[in-house]
Image 1: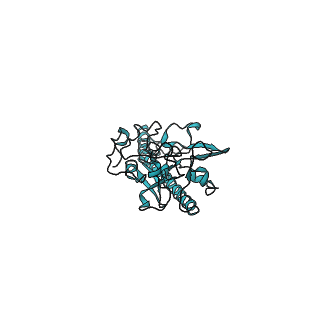
Image 2: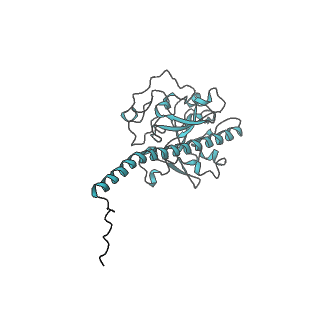
Image 3: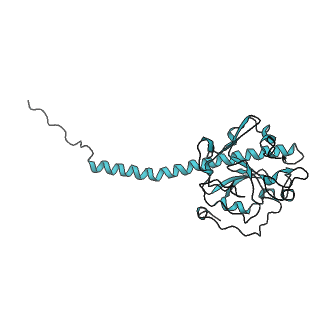
Length: 259
């Protein structure tokens, strides 16, 4: 008996068909992956903004308990005297997650080299602190006779000292930064010349390309929002900050960002 012929209608994929399928998958991935990366970055920025809103609550709790006044600037040589860390520590107990922006969780000592992605750390009274946010040094209260804060001149006239001011929504209080505090003196203060090196210029502690040309800022009224890097120059940093001063020339790395 002669066996029936095999069904030869089922064909395997040809090489060309396989290459076409691979090309289509590669094309889809090239479209989807940047979108996923962008969405992931946006999610991190939202978490960061939420963190700063919580910090705004802490600062308001502190000032409510201290006659509306911010922590007193003493001297940077005293343990915790040159920072906001110790005075507000009791209000931030159990809040480790809110201390770090998801885009900036590694310190330079741990291997991070890019300022925008840097967390910072310090040890005070034997306790290790890690954070990726910074205070506006101009908000400190000052003891009588103190005229500078971390080298910022005329602090006795320029510092905010307390939380009750007109237009608090325009005054930066606590924001993303690669060190625990800083502050510009003038609107004409320069921007960091590049984004690969840490800079101690007035704006250098905060001018970080952390969220696609923006950072999150908590204002004195307790609100928090995304702020473009160039917009940092148009915030009311201290009492004598003059918006009539000319803006600096933007370095090459900042020119693509929105004005």
